[in-house]
Image (cartoon, helix red, strand yellow):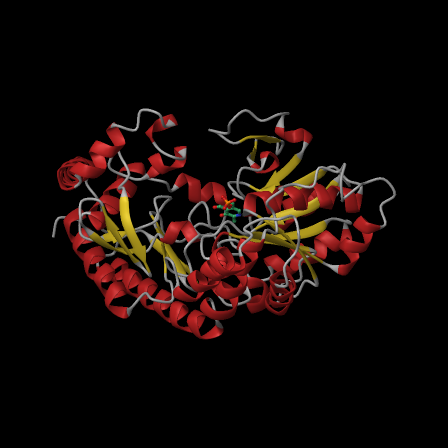
Length: 453
Ligand SMILES: Cc1ncc(COP(=O)(O)O)c(C=O)c1O
Protein backbone atom coordinates (compact mmCIF):
# COMPACT_ATOMS: atom_id res chain seq x y z
CA UNK A 1 0.00 0.00 0.00
CA UNK A 2 1.42 3.39 -1.01
CA UNK A 3 2.01 5.82 1.82
CA UNK A 4 2.13 9.61 1.84
CA UNK A 5 5.01 11.28 3.62
CA UNK A 6 3.62 14.13 5.75
CA UNK A 7 6.66 16.38 5.37
CA UNK A 8 6.44 15.99 1.63
CA UNK A 9 2.69 16.74 1.78
CA UNK A 10 3.36 19.91 3.79
CA UNK A 11 5.86 21.06 1.14
CA UNK A 12 3.46 20.36 -1.71
CA UNK A 13 0.67 22.15 0.11
CA UNK A 14 2.83 25.22 0.70
CA UNK A 15 3.73 25.28 -3.00
CA UNK A 16 0.03 25.16 -3.97
CA UNK A 17 -0.89 27.87 -1.43
CA UNK A 18 1.77 30.19 -2.84
CA UNK A 19 0.60 29.52 -6.40
CA UNK A 20 -3.01 30.21 -5.44
CA UNK A 21 -2.12 33.47 -3.76
CA UNK A 22 0.06 34.63 -6.63
CA UNK A 23 -2.51 33.69 -9.30
CA UNK A 24 -5.46 35.45 -7.73
CA UNK A 25 -4.43 39.00 -6.81
CA UNK A 26 -7.81 40.58 -7.53
CA UNK A 27 -9.74 38.04 -5.48
CA UNK A 28 -7.26 38.52 -2.63
CA UNK A 29 -7.58 42.29 -2.82
CA UNK A 30 -11.39 42.13 -2.77
CA UNK A 31 -11.30 39.75 0.17
CA UNK A 32 -8.89 41.92 2.11
CA UNK A 33 -11.01 45.00 1.51
CA UNK A 34 -14.32 43.44 2.63
CA UNK A 35 -14.20 45.27 5.94
CA UNK A 36 -17.98 45.53 6.33
CA UNK A 37 -18.61 41.82 5.91
CA UNK A 38 -18.63 39.56 8.93
CA UNK A 39 -15.70 37.19 8.37
CA UNK A 40 -14.87 39.17 5.19
CA UNK A 41 -17.41 37.13 3.19
CA UNK A 42 -21.15 37.37 2.38
CA UNK A 43 -21.73 34.15 4.35
CA UNK A 44 -19.23 32.75 6.83
CA UNK A 45 -19.09 29.30 5.22
CA UNK A 46 -17.45 30.89 2.15
CA UNK A 47 -14.27 30.88 4.24
CA UNK A 48 -14.29 27.11 3.74
CA UNK A 49 -12.66 27.55 0.32
CA UNK A 50 -9.04 26.44 0.47
CA UNK A 51 -6.11 28.81 0.15
CA UNK A 52 -7.04 31.41 2.77
CA UNK A 53 -9.57 33.39 0.72
CA UNK A 54 -12.33 32.52 -1.77
CA UNK A 55 -12.22 33.32 -5.46
CA UNK A 56 -14.49 36.18 -6.51
CA UNK A 57 -16.32 35.20 -9.66
CA UNK A 58 -17.29 37.29 -12.65
CA UNK A 59 -19.46 34.94 -14.75
CA UNK A 60 -20.94 31.47 -14.41
CA UNK A 61 -22.64 29.58 -17.24
CA UNK A 62 -23.33 25.87 -17.46
CA UNK A 63 -20.40 24.19 -15.71
CA UNK A 64 -17.95 27.04 -16.27
CA UNK A 65 -16.97 29.80 -13.86
CA UNK A 66 -14.72 32.73 -14.74
CA UNK A 67 -13.13 34.55 -11.80
CA UNK A 68 -12.13 38.21 -11.46
CA UNK A 69 -8.52 37.36 -12.32
CA UNK A 70 -9.65 35.93 -15.64
CA UNK A 71 -9.26 32.19 -14.96
CA UNK A 72 -11.88 29.83 -16.32
CA UNK A 73 -12.77 26.77 -14.25
CA UNK A 74 -14.57 23.51 -14.88
CA UNK A 75 -16.99 23.62 -11.97
CA UNK A 76 -17.60 20.32 -10.20
CA UNK A 77 -18.74 22.13 -7.03
CA UNK A 78 -21.89 23.49 -8.68
CA UNK A 79 -22.82 25.53 -5.65
CA UNK A 80 -22.73 22.39 -3.47
CA UNK A 81 -25.74 21.13 -5.50
CA UNK A 82 -27.56 24.48 -5.68
CA UNK A 83 -26.45 24.62 -9.33
CA UNK A 84 -26.90 20.94 -10.24
CA UNK A 85 -28.96 22.18 -13.22
CA UNK A 86 -25.86 24.12 -14.34
CA UNK A 87 -25.32 27.84 -13.85
CA UNK A 88 -28.11 29.95 -15.35
CA UNK A 89 -29.66 27.28 -17.58
CA UNK A 90 -31.39 29.07 -20.45
CA UNK A 91 -34.81 27.44 -19.96
CA UNK A 92 -34.91 28.51 -16.29
CA UNK A 93 -33.65 31.98 -17.15
CA UNK A 94 -36.38 32.41 -19.73
CA UNK A 95 -39.07 31.49 -17.20
CA UNK A 96 -37.47 33.72 -14.55
CA UNK A 97 -37.30 36.66 -16.97
CA UNK A 98 -40.87 36.07 -18.11
CA UNK A 99 -42.04 36.10 -14.51
CA UNK A 100 -40.11 39.21 -13.53
CA UNK A 101 -40.36 41.28 -16.72
CA UNK A 102 -43.53 40.19 -18.47
CA UNK A 103 -45.83 38.93 -15.76
CA UNK A 104 -44.29 40.89 -12.92
CA UNK A 105 -44.79 39.99 -9.28
CA UNK A 106 -41.86 38.28 -7.60
CA UNK A 107 -43.80 37.77 -4.39
CA UNK A 108 -47.42 38.69 -3.71
CA UNK A 109 -48.87 36.27 -1.10
CA UNK A 110 -51.06 34.93 -3.93
CA UNK A 111 -50.60 31.61 -5.70
CA UNK A 112 -49.77 31.17 -9.38
CA UNK A 113 -50.66 28.20 -11.58
CA UNK A 114 -47.03 27.09 -11.55
CA UNK A 115 -47.42 25.79 -8.00
CA UNK A 116 -49.93 23.14 -9.04
CA UNK A 117 -47.72 22.08 -11.96
CA UNK A 118 -44.70 21.73 -9.68
CA UNK A 119 -46.71 19.84 -7.03
CA UNK A 120 -47.84 17.32 -9.67
CA UNK A 121 -44.30 16.95 -10.98
CA UNK A 122 -42.91 16.34 -7.49
CA UNK A 123 -45.59 13.69 -6.91
CA UNK A 124 -44.67 12.02 -10.21
CA UNK A 125 -41.00 11.99 -9.26
CA UNK A 126 -41.04 11.22 -5.53
CA UNK A 127 -44.46 9.69 -4.89
CA UNK A 128 -45.83 11.84 -2.07
CA UNK A 129 -49.22 13.33 -2.92
CA UNK A 130 -49.17 16.71 -1.16
CA UNK A 131 -46.55 19.48 -1.25
CA UNK A 132 -45.69 22.79 0.38
CA UNK A 133 -42.92 25.16 -0.62
CA UNK A 134 -40.16 26.92 1.26
CA UNK A 135 -37.12 28.98 0.28
CA UNK A 136 -34.46 26.53 1.41
CA UNK A 137 -34.03 22.91 2.38
CA UNK A 138 -33.22 24.10 5.90
CA UNK A 139 -36.64 25.76 6.09
CA UNK A 140 -38.31 22.65 4.71
CA UNK A 141 -36.63 20.46 7.33
CA UNK A 142 -37.43 22.82 10.17
CA UNK A 143 -41.08 23.07 9.23
CA UNK A 144 -41.43 19.35 8.50
CA UNK A 145 -40.01 18.48 11.93
CA UNK A 146 -42.66 20.65 13.56
CA UNK A 147 -45.36 18.94 11.51
CA UNK A 148 -43.99 15.52 12.45
CA UNK A 149 -44.25 16.42 16.12
CA UNK A 150 -47.79 17.66 15.56
CA UNK A 151 -48.88 14.58 13.62
CA UNK A 152 -47.48 12.06 16.10
CA UNK A 153 -47.78 13.88 19.42
CA UNK A 154 -44.16 12.90 20.14
CA UNK A 155 -41.34 15.28 20.88
CA UNK A 156 -38.05 13.92 19.54
CA UNK A 157 -36.40 13.21 16.25
CA UNK A 158 -33.93 10.45 15.59
CA UNK A 159 -30.96 11.36 13.41
CA UNK A 160 -27.67 9.79 12.43
CA UNK A 161 -24.32 10.82 13.76
CA UNK A 162 -22.66 13.50 11.56
CA UNK A 163 -25.78 14.04 9.49
CA UNK A 164 -26.44 17.46 7.99
CA UNK A 165 -29.86 18.85 7.14
CA UNK A 166 -29.14 22.59 7.19
CA UNK A 167 -28.96 24.72 10.32
CA UNK A 168 -31.60 22.71 12.17
CA UNK A 169 -30.86 22.75 15.91
CA UNK A 170 -32.22 19.25 16.55
CA UNK A 171 -29.80 17.64 14.10
CA UNK A 172 -26.36 18.70 15.34
CA UNK A 173 -26.00 15.66 17.56
CA UNK A 174 -23.56 12.85 18.12
CA UNK A 175 -23.88 10.07 20.68
CA UNK A 176 -21.72 10.20 23.83
CA UNK A 177 -20.21 7.01 25.27
CA UNK A 178 -23.57 6.06 26.81
CA UNK A 179 -25.50 6.70 23.58
CA UNK A 180 -27.03 9.98 24.81
CA UNK A 181 -27.33 12.76 22.21
CA UNK A 182 -24.81 15.52 22.82
CA UNK A 183 -23.91 18.56 20.79
CA UNK A 184 -21.64 17.88 17.84
CA UNK A 185 -18.22 19.55 18.15
CA UNK A 186 -18.40 23.02 16.60
CA UNK A 187 -22.18 23.37 16.99
CA UNK A 188 -23.31 26.97 17.55
CA UNK A 189 -25.27 27.71 20.72
CA UNK A 190 -27.89 24.95 20.92
CA UNK A 191 -31.04 26.34 22.60
CA UNK A 192 -31.40 23.29 24.87
CA UNK A 193 -29.23 20.24 25.58
CA UNK A 194 -29.45 17.99 22.53
CA UNK A 195 -30.92 15.04 24.41
CA UNK A 196 -34.05 17.12 25.07
CA UNK A 197 -34.89 17.09 21.37
CA UNK A 198 -32.90 14.35 19.74
CA UNK A 199 -31.93 10.71 19.70
CA UNK A 200 -28.86 9.86 17.67
CA UNK A 201 -27.26 6.64 16.48
CA UNK A 202 -24.78 5.59 13.81
CA UNK A 203 -25.93 5.23 10.21
CA UNK A 204 -26.43 1.59 9.19
CA UNK A 205 -26.93 0.48 12.82
CA UNK A 206 -30.46 -0.93 12.87
CA UNK A 207 -30.15 -2.40 16.38
CA UNK A 208 -29.35 1.06 17.74
CA UNK A 209 -32.26 2.59 15.82
CA UNK A 210 -34.63 0.05 17.35
CA UNK A 211 -33.17 0.55 20.82
CA UNK A 212 -33.82 4.30 20.62
CA UNK A 213 -37.28 3.93 19.11
CA UNK A 214 -38.25 1.69 22.03
CA UNK A 215 -38.29 4.80 24.22
CA UNK A 216 -41.58 5.67 22.50
CA UNK A 217 -40.89 9.39 22.13
CA UNK A 218 -39.59 9.64 18.55
CA UNK A 219 -41.83 11.63 16.19
CA UNK A 220 -39.65 11.02 13.15
CA UNK A 221 -36.49 9.47 11.85
CA UNK A 222 -34.84 12.14 9.71
CA UNK A 223 -32.17 11.00 7.30
CA UNK A 224 -30.67 11.34 3.87
CA UNK A 225 -30.94 7.97 2.11
CA UNK A 226 -27.14 8.06 1.98
CA UNK A 227 -25.18 10.47 4.16
CA UNK A 228 -23.58 13.03 1.85
CA UNK A 229 -22.24 15.63 4.21
CA UNK A 230 -19.49 13.62 5.86
CA UNK A 231 -18.16 12.11 2.67
CA UNK A 232 -20.74 9.82 1.11
CA UNK A 233 -21.86 6.94 3.31
CA UNK A 234 -24.26 4.69 1.40
CA UNK A 235 -26.89 2.56 3.11
CA UNK A 236 -26.06 -1.11 3.47
CA UNK A 237 -28.42 -3.49 1.66
CA UNK A 238 -31.78 -3.59 3.42
CA UNK A 239 -31.00 -0.68 5.76
CA UNK A 240 -33.56 1.75 4.34
CA UNK A 241 -36.37 -0.79 4.07
CA UNK A 242 -35.73 -1.91 7.67
CA UNK A 243 -35.74 1.74 8.73
CA UNK A 244 -39.15 2.06 7.10
CA UNK A 245 -40.40 -1.03 8.94
CA UNK A 246 -39.02 0.11 12.29
CA UNK A 247 -40.56 3.56 11.91
CA UNK A 248 -43.95 2.01 11.23
CA UNK A 249 -43.60 -0.51 14.05
CA UNK A 250 -42.80 2.18 16.64
CA UNK A 251 -45.20 4.88 15.40
CA UNK A 252 -42.51 7.24 14.11
CA UNK A 253 -42.55 8.94 10.73
CA UNK A 254 -39.83 8.40 8.14
CA UNK A 255 -38.51 11.73 6.85
CA UNK A 256 -36.24 11.44 3.82
CA UNK A 257 -34.12 14.45 2.84
CA UNK A 258 -33.04 14.18 -0.80
CA UNK A 259 -31.52 17.64 -1.15
CA UNK A 260 -28.21 16.09 -2.23
CA UNK A 261 -29.11 12.50 -3.17
CA UNK A 262 -31.43 13.84 -5.88
CA UNK A 263 -28.26 13.24 -7.91
CA UNK A 264 -29.29 9.55 -8.03
CA UNK A 265 -31.90 10.16 -10.73
CA UNK A 266 -35.00 12.13 -11.73
CA UNK A 267 -36.83 10.74 -8.67
CA UNK A 268 -33.78 10.60 -6.40
CA UNK A 269 -32.98 7.48 -4.41
CA UNK A 270 -36.61 7.41 -3.31
CA UNK A 271 -37.78 6.43 -6.79
CA UNK A 272 -34.65 4.51 -7.74
CA UNK A 273 -34.62 2.31 -4.65
CA UNK A 274 -38.34 2.20 -3.83
CA UNK A 275 -38.23 4.12 -0.54
CA UNK A 276 -41.62 5.09 0.92
CA UNK A 277 -41.17 8.11 3.19
CA UNK A 278 -43.96 9.76 5.19
CA UNK A 279 -42.35 13.15 4.69
CA UNK A 280 -39.93 14.09 1.92
CA UNK A 281 -37.61 17.10 1.83
CA UNK A 282 -35.79 18.69 -1.09
CA UNK A 283 -34.17 22.02 -1.89
CA UNK A 284 -31.17 23.68 -3.52
CA UNK A 285 -31.21 22.52 -7.15
CA UNK A 286 -34.90 22.43 -8.03
CA UNK A 287 -35.11 26.17 -8.79
CA UNK A 288 -31.77 26.39 -10.62
CA UNK A 289 -30.43 28.52 -7.79
CA UNK A 290 -33.48 30.73 -7.22
CA UNK A 291 -34.17 30.03 -3.51
CA UNK A 292 -36.51 27.04 -3.53
CA UNK A 293 -37.36 24.19 -1.21
CA UNK A 294 -40.24 21.79 -0.79
CA UNK A 295 -41.62 19.15 1.54
CA UNK A 296 -43.99 16.41 0.57
CA UNK A 297 -46.49 14.72 2.90
CA UNK A 298 -48.24 11.38 2.73
CA UNK A 299 -52.04 11.54 2.86
CA UNK A 300 -51.99 10.00 6.37
CA UNK A 301 -49.61 12.63 7.72
CA UNK A 302 -51.57 15.42 6.02
CA UNK A 303 -54.81 14.07 7.58
CA UNK A 304 -53.27 13.83 11.04
CA UNK A 305 -52.11 17.44 10.76
CA UNK A 306 -55.38 18.74 9.32
CA UNK A 307 -57.47 16.93 11.94
CA UNK A 308 -55.39 18.17 14.84
CA UNK A 309 -57.73 20.04 17.18
CA UNK A 310 -55.36 22.83 18.28
CA UNK A 311 -52.74 23.78 15.75
CA UNK A 312 -53.44 26.74 13.51
CA UNK A 313 -51.56 26.24 10.24
CA UNK A 314 -52.88 29.41 8.67
CA UNK A 315 -52.00 32.08 11.17
CA UNK A 316 -50.89 31.61 14.77
CA UNK A 317 -48.88 28.41 14.18
CA UNK A 318 -45.90 30.35 12.93
CA UNK A 319 -45.98 29.05 9.38
CA UNK A 320 -42.52 29.94 8.14
CA UNK A 321 -41.60 32.29 5.34
CA UNK A 322 -43.59 35.21 3.98
CA UNK A 323 -41.70 34.68 0.74
CA UNK A 324 -42.27 30.90 0.70
CA UNK A 325 -44.14 29.67 -2.37
CA UNK A 326 -43.45 32.95 -4.16
CA UNK A 327 -44.17 33.26 -7.86
CA UNK A 328 -40.55 33.56 -8.90
CA UNK A 329 -39.42 30.37 -7.11
CA UNK A 330 -42.32 28.46 -8.59
CA UNK A 331 -41.64 29.68 -12.12
CA UNK A 332 -37.99 28.67 -11.69
CA UNK A 333 -38.92 25.24 -10.31
CA UNK A 334 -41.37 24.59 -13.13
CA UNK A 335 -38.85 25.34 -15.84
CA UNK A 336 -35.96 23.61 -14.09
CA UNK A 337 -37.85 20.39 -13.38
CA UNK A 338 -39.77 20.45 -16.65
CA UNK A 339 -36.99 21.38 -19.06
CA UNK A 340 -33.55 21.09 -17.45
CA UNK A 341 -33.32 18.28 -14.90
CA UNK A 342 -35.08 15.87 -17.24
CA UNK A 343 -34.75 12.08 -17.52
CA UNK A 344 -32.40 12.59 -20.45
CA UNK A 345 -30.24 15.06 -18.55
CA UNK A 346 -29.93 12.64 -15.63
CA UNK A 347 -28.92 9.85 -17.99
CA UNK A 348 -26.04 12.00 -19.24
CA UNK A 349 -25.07 13.23 -15.76
CA UNK A 350 -25.06 9.73 -14.27
CA UNK A 351 -23.00 8.37 -17.14
CA UNK A 352 -20.43 11.07 -16.41
CA UNK A 353 -20.60 10.38 -12.66
CA UNK A 354 -19.75 6.76 -13.44
CA UNK A 355 -16.88 7.81 -15.73
CA UNK A 356 -15.53 10.17 -13.06
CA UNK A 357 -15.73 7.59 -10.25
CA UNK A 358 -14.25 4.90 -12.51
CA UNK A 359 -11.24 7.06 -13.34
CA UNK A 360 -10.58 7.89 -9.68
CA UNK A 361 -10.96 4.23 -8.68
CA UNK A 362 -8.59 3.17 -11.44
CA UNK A 363 -5.88 5.56 -10.21
CA UNK A 364 -6.41 4.47 -6.58
CA UNK A 365 -6.05 0.83 -7.67
CA UNK A 366 -3.01 1.34 -9.89
CA UNK A 367 -1.07 3.29 -7.26
CA UNK A 368 -2.48 1.24 -4.36
CA UNK A 369 -3.72 4.34 -2.52
CA UNK A 370 -5.74 3.57 0.62
CA UNK A 371 -8.62 5.88 -0.29
CA UNK A 372 -12.12 5.07 -1.54
CA UNK A 373 -14.68 6.68 -3.82
CA UNK A 374 -18.45 6.44 -3.59
CA UNK A 375 -20.87 7.47 -6.35
CA UNK A 376 -24.53 8.41 -6.13
CA UNK A 377 -25.61 8.94 -9.71
CA UNK A 378 -24.28 12.30 -10.86
CA UNK A 379 -22.28 12.82 -7.64
CA UNK A 380 -19.09 11.14 -6.49
CA UNK A 381 -16.74 11.74 -3.64
CA UNK A 382 -13.44 10.29 -2.50
CA UNK A 383 -12.45 9.83 1.10
CA UNK A 384 -9.01 9.25 2.60
CA UNK A 385 -9.69 5.75 3.86
CA UNK A 386 -10.28 2.25 2.45
CA UNK A 387 -12.72 0.51 2.56
CA UNK A 388 -15.37 3.24 2.35
CA UNK A 389 -16.77 4.14 5.80
CA UNK A 390 -20.11 2.65 6.83
CA UNK A 391 -21.16 5.38 9.26
CA UNK A 392 -20.66 9.06 9.99
CA UNK A 393 -18.17 8.65 12.83
CA UNK A 394 -15.94 6.36 10.76
CA UNK A 395 -16.07 8.84 7.94
CA UNK A 396 -15.39 11.81 10.24
CA UNK A 397 -12.35 9.98 11.57
CA UNK A 398 -11.02 9.72 8.02
CA UNK A 399 -10.91 13.50 7.61
CA UNK A 400 -7.51 14.90 6.74
CA UNK A 401 -7.44 18.70 6.52
CA UNK A 402 -4.02 18.87 4.87
CA UNK A 403 -4.79 16.34 2.16
CA UNK A 404 -8.14 18.00 1.66
CA UNK A 405 -6.62 21.42 1.13
CA UNK A 406 -3.88 20.03 -1.09
CA UNK A 407 -6.34 18.27 -3.40
CA UNK A 408 -8.61 21.33 -3.59
CA UNK A 409 -5.78 23.72 -4.37
CA UNK A 410 -4.08 21.34 -6.77
CA UNK A 411 -7.30 21.15 -8.79
CA UNK A 412 -8.14 24.85 -8.46
CA UNK A 413 -4.67 25.98 -9.57
CA UNK A 414 -5.13 23.85 -12.71
CA UNK A 415 -8.66 24.91 -13.63
CA UNK A 416 -11.02 22.64 -11.65
CA UNK A 417 -13.29 23.58 -8.76
CA UNK A 418 -14.25 20.87 -6.29
CA UNK A 419 -16.90 21.57 -3.66
CA UNK A 420 -15.19 23.27 -0.71
CA UNK A 421 -16.84 20.82 1.65
CA UNK A 422 -14.72 17.65 1.38
CA UNK A 423 -14.04 16.17 -2.07
CA UNK A 424 -17.38 16.04 -3.78
CA UNK A 425 -17.80 16.38 -7.53
CA UNK A 426 -21.13 16.82 -9.24
CA UNK A 427 -22.07 16.60 -12.91
CA UNK A 428 -24.61 18.94 -14.50
CA UNK A 429 -26.35 18.72 -17.88
CA UNK A 430 -23.54 20.61 -19.64
CA UNK A 431 -20.60 18.74 -18.09
CA UNK A 432 -18.69 16.85 -20.79
CA UNK A 433 -16.48 13.77 -20.98
CA UNK A 434 -13.56 16.12 -21.74
CA UNK A 435 -14.18 17.89 -18.40
CA UNK A 436 -14.28 14.58 -16.56
CA UNK A 437 -11.15 13.32 -18.31
CA UNK A 438 -9.30 16.51 -17.38
CA UNK A 439 -10.10 15.76 -13.75
CA UNK A 440 -8.97 12.15 -14.21
CA UNK A 441 -5.59 13.27 -15.58
CA UNK A 442 -5.06 15.86 -12.85
CA UNK A 443 -6.09 13.40 -10.17
CA UNK A 444 -3.46 10.97 -11.40
CA UNK A 445 -0.75 13.64 -11.51
CA UNK A 446 -1.68 14.78 -7.96
CA UNK A 447 -1.41 11.21 -6.72
CA UNK A 448 1.95 10.72 -8.45
CA UNK A 449 3.28 13.81 -6.73
CA UNK A 450 1.92 12.70 -3.37
CA UNK A 451 3.58 9.28 -3.53
CA UNK A 452 6.70 10.77 -5.17
CA UNK A 453 6.73 8.82 -8.45
C1 LIG B 1 -29.11 16.93 2.93
C2 LIG B 1 -29.23 18.40 3.13
N1 LIG B 1 -30.37 18.89 3.60
C3 LIG B 1 -30.53 20.22 3.79
C4 LIG B 1 -29.53 21.09 3.52
C5 LIG B 1 -29.71 22.55 3.74
O1 LIG B 1 -29.79 23.22 2.53
P1 LIG B 1 -29.83 24.81 2.53
O2 LIG B 1 -28.53 25.26 3.14
O3 LIG B 1 -29.93 25.17 1.10
O4 LIG B 1 -30.99 25.22 3.33
C6 LIG B 1 -28.30 20.61 3.04
C7 LIG B 1 -27.18 21.52 2.76
O5 LIG B 1 -26.08 21.15 2.44
C8 LIG B 1 -28.16 19.23 2.84
O6 LIG B 1 -27.02 18.71 2.38
